Length: 448
Image 1 (cartoon, rainbow, N blue to C red):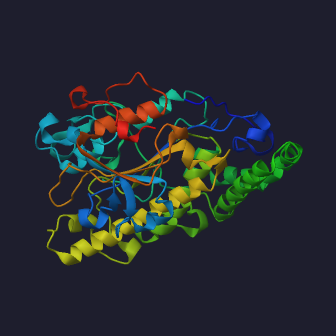
Image 2 (image 1 turned 180 degrees about the vertical axis):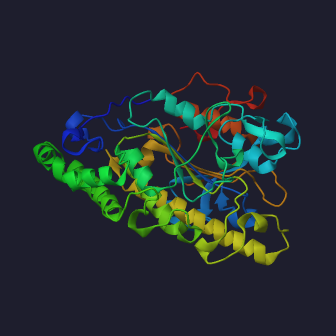
């Protein structure tokens, strides 16, 4: 696992309260060798299974030769992605649950990153939260205090199940058994969480904004001093970094903080009709948090287990979950679900595009990362946990083989994928994750 210390954090706390901006890691300032960059983990989730014939790509001898209708938006990244087939969320099957009546969506979401079952509780069908720590949190724990934020949980849209609280169908992230972590959907709060501002009451926030005007203005002197020490590539990287930050600030200029603050740039983060704008804003902030080394672990939920979203993002009023229960012979439902999953694939493609835009040595942030697109079901209308659709991108700093591949594992469990992730982040002593009986070991086909 590469060694990496946070460097070149330029702080202006005395000038503008708690706000701070970090430069990305710059090899010309630190004499970093190629690959001497932090490894990151990003898990992107969408639910309700997929439409297999419209998701499955074409390949020859394990090499991708073409992408399906749903995966077509990933065409610019075909050499960066690996399509995984034949992985089962075996821990989500009723056999492993303390109560057989637990709903399949909750079981799949609770198990995809924990590798274990749900506990008993007071939610749907007597279910509770998952019985173990999710792998993203295990990996984040391994970074200790190297970053300002332990991890980042982002919700692309509002998924709250109840006015009284959150359900187990709302998250795949667990700090420990029965200790769920839920996403942040509001752009202003997410910005504050990432970049250190906590505006509180509107008057306090107004004073902070008036005092700083722009974080970069206060950092100008520091930036000018280091420019002469940077290589041409690092000067370009700083320019990209600062421009991205200015873009975020520009959207936040319209925030009016009160008991119910207006969304940045006029975005209503509770509106499903604005899913596209919400996704764009939150993906950009997440990538910026990774580029700033504010955190190295992020999860992004595009919906929840059970979905229950309308399809306003693609101009339809149907229920995603209801459509997923329609039979395979319902051509209209199959078409709408294909369109929705294609739309989500485009958002995943946006994430990869932005990560590839951040240069690190001879490669990109994506090269030093592992990015997964996962689901809680393989197929929605039969609630099957067999052959769940999973896309992997990135090489974890060279630990994983290059993309452009299509791997059929036969019948392996996602627990083995979790073990493989642990090894990708230097935890080679991990030979089992979740329910021990469901582990066979690492997925060697993925490892360089």
